[in-house]
Amino acid sequence: MKPVVYTGTSISHSEARKILDADYRPPIRRHDIRRLLKSPPEIIGIIDGVFFDNAAVAHREIIEAIKTGSQLWAARVWERFALLNLIHTA
Image (cartoon, helix red, strand yellow):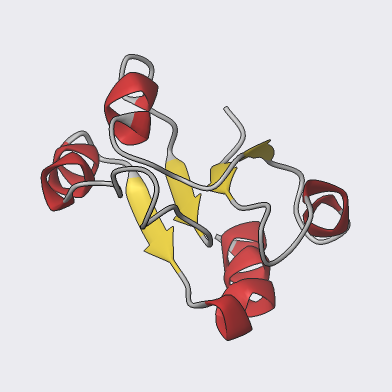
């Protein structure tokens, strides 16, 4: 299964695909990881998320993902290219 990467605000999906072949999804929000864990990917990358007008991803969701064995990578906006390259080499 391809890595799943949540982005779209700081880098477009088409730009990110030039760096890493992954399943790109919109910025992460509450319950996205729980839905994803029905068939957990090996790697989850978080670059962008929602905060003000929607509920942000909960720390419990992140803990659940780690407990399933998924690697969870997160980056601040200025680290996004490094994150995609790290996942690519993982």
